[in-house]
Structures are given as C-alpha cells and as structure tokens.
Amino acid sequence: TTVLAIETSCDETGVAVVRDRQILSNVVASQIATHQKYGGVVPEVASRQHLATINGVIAAALGESGLAWAEIDGIAATCAPGLVGALLMGLTAAKTLALLHNKPFLGIHHLEGHIYASYLSEPDLQPPFLCLLVSGGHTSLIYVKDCGHYETLGQTRDDAAGEAFDKVARLLHLGYPGGPVIDRLAREGNPHAFSLPEGQISLPEGGFHPYDSSFSGLKTAVLRLVQKLEPQTPELPTADIAASFQETVARSLTKRAIACARNYGLSTIAVGGGVAANSGLREHLTAAAKAHNVRVLFPPLKFCTDNAAMIACAAAEHLSRGRRSPLTLGVQSRMSLTDVMTFYETVA
Ligand code: ATP
Ligand code: FE
Ligand code: MG
Image (cartoon, rainbow, N blue to C red; front, top):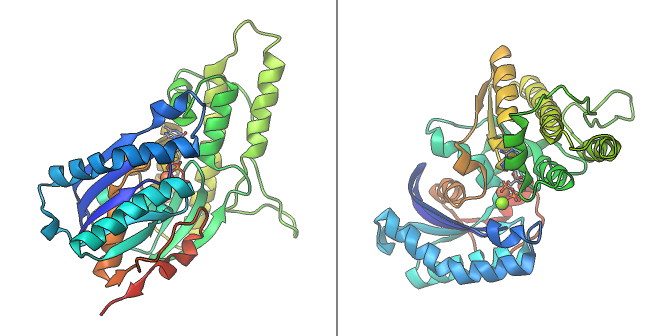
C-alpha cells in the first residue's frame, strides 16, 4: 500500500511517500527560523507559511519518490490535534489531490503518526506494545492494541515534557526550541549538581499515581533556583542546571514507562515524539529496559520530530484495512487518540 501524506499540524510542512513501512521520499520544510524571533510558534504566521510552501513540498516529495500519481493508492493528511489554521492547509491540499486524482482520502491523528514512526525503522514491530509518547504538547503512555485501537494508561497532568524543555530553556535564555539546546548543554554539565523535585500525582487513597506525571512544579523549581543563584554568581551555571533538569525528566519518564510495561505485561516500549531525541532519556530508558528485559525502540532523530513519513505509515496501515475518510472530515485542535476510528468508514 503506497500513500502520499501531508503533515502541517504545527511549524513543519512535511510531505512524504511511503510504501507500507518503506520511505520513498520524506521532505520537511521547517519554519523554525521564522518563529525563532518570536520565541515560539505564531499560529497565523504558521498557516501562511504552510500555504506558501506546500505546493513545492508536494512536488518535491512526489518527484523524489520517482512515482507517478497512478502508483499512489491513497492520500492522507494530519487532521487533529494541532493548530486549526495550520491543519486546514494540509487537509485541504490532501482532499483536493484525492478528488483530482480520484484516490481514497484519509485523515490521520498526529499522535498516531508519532506512534508509527517506530514502524519506519522496525519492519517487524507489531502490536501489542507500549508507546511512550513525549512531544511538545503531549506526554503519554499508550497501550497500542491494534491499528486504530489505543488506550491511554498515563499522561501529564500539566505541562508536556517537550513544553518543560522549552520553558526551562526560555528561563535560561537559551532560545527556541529548547530541547536540542538543553540536550547539548547538559553534556557539559553535572546531572547531580542540583537536586530538583520529580513531579508526582497523589492518589486519594494515598501513594502516587504510577503512570501519570507532572512537569510544572519542576519548571517552577528551576525558576526559583535561577532566581536564587542569579544575585550570587557572576555567571549562571547553565550547563549544570540543564543537566540536572534533564536528569530529573529522564528519570521520571523512565520509571513510569518501565512500571507500565511490566504491569501490563508488554515486552516492547516504542518511544515517539520530539523528546524521544533526548540523549538523557535514551540513556536512562535503555539501561532500565535492559535491566528489566524489556525491548526499547527509539526512532532515528529525524522521525522523532514532526514529519510526514510517520503520517503516511499510519495511513498505509489504515488503508490496507479498507479504511478511508469522507471528504467532509474536518480538523480539530484537540482530539483523543481513543476516538481515531471515528475518522473512517470501511469500504469492502
Ligand atoms: P505534539 O506532537 O504533541 O503536537 P509537537 O509536534 O510540537 O507536539 P514534536 O515536534 O513531536 O512536538 O516535538 C517538539 C518538541 O520536542 C519540542 O518541545 C522540543 O523542544 C522537543 N525536543 C526536540 N529535540 C529534543 C531533545 N534532543 N531533547 C529534548 N527535547 C527535544
Ligand atoms: Fe508532533
Ligand atoms: Mg514541531
């Protein structure tokens, strides 16, 4: 099954052609440089930029794949969750192409794409498995039962892991996006220089929630630490702060993912989302998984952050099961992963 997919949920214009789990082309036009001067993504600017670049990116992706439209079985686009204006650009382009070339159209949930990023490098991976999804907007432990069938076992109660990286980077004056800068800086710092609190969710019956997390308290603790140190030192020990922060996040995510996999009897953890690129998380989780005899899969860096290849891969899975979306499907800024099957009707 060969799919051309478009991803425009945030600040990356991505188009890819994928045949089952094999990437034939994967083009990403990043808007990061445009948004950097604002310190974050500006939704209206993102939509306009998608509109300006999308036709060129579609042509490049199809050209690189070496295929003609006749060889494409379906056309997909991310339809939720994300920035509404940005999503509309990709979804409208995909519907138009589907009509023009008389192909099935599929709307794809962005987080489902992050889950399927692992399929691109692991051709043998099959459900059931656990997905640790750690991105700019989400931090979840997802029980992947089958294509389209998911259960969220744990999630953050406040900030997402990537959001925490971005906010801490901002208060250390490191710029946007924060994850890669903190990751780089942390390598030069001492991860045990400062003891920072790991956010925990108390349960009414006592004890703590084993899978849910919280990162807003950690972010506040870093802020207090910076406020305390600033008058005392001529130069902030940013590398030590970055390393200590990263260590706390990595430990927290590792503990929850391992506990969840063990309690549900899942022998594989597939990690997805931008924070899957983090070297501290990779180290901690790899070591813990080895100790507990769990297989852990990290996609290559370019499939961790937003790209259309992961969306195409998810779409190929759905399409091969005879699913397609009506052309009346709209975009949604928020949408639970457990509702993805509402996007599809099954054609015999
Ligand atoms: P969502 O998928 O939840 O809608 P998103 O698409 O914006 O959010 P991604 O593109 O998957 O998120 O990931 C971007 C996030 O990943 C940013 O918060 C960024 O700081 C973080 N990130 C990227 N690289 C790293 C890294 N090496 N270490 C930690 N965080 C990172
Ligand atoms: Fe994403
Ligand atoms: Mg992004």
